[in-house]
Length: 159
Ligand code: FES
Ligand code: FES
Image 1 (cartoon, rainbow, N blue to C red):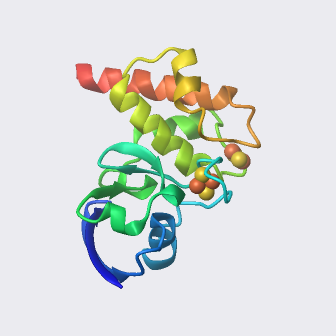
Image 2: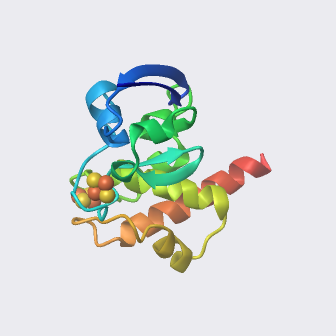
């Protein structure tokens, strides 16, 4: 076992973990992050996407010990004081989810994209989310939601 410490959604977490434990299993099994999903066994679906030091990663491809000393953000951590993040609001407004299984990972990948590219084209949005699969929506409402969130965030920045 190995002692690890990390920040998860703004709070310090300390655990003794098996060095082989995947970050996704730490988040779901030990930390009750219900917004982190496992959709595949092959690093393909993106349902498990979280931010590691602000960059999106598929948490099924990261060992928990690799996150030792780092900051992990799940979809639970992006709402502020009970207010939804603009991406969460836009996904609802644009009907960008049906079953919702892909949605938390999709939102985290989109957050990484908008942090790096605040005003992306639709093509850049599709490229930014290409590692995240959705079986329900056909993707168009997701692209529209990210576009709406980008516009909302730009308006917020202008005050
Ligand atoms: S669970 Fe599918 S990419 Fe991680
Ligand atoms: S909303 Fe069902 S997989 Fe995307």
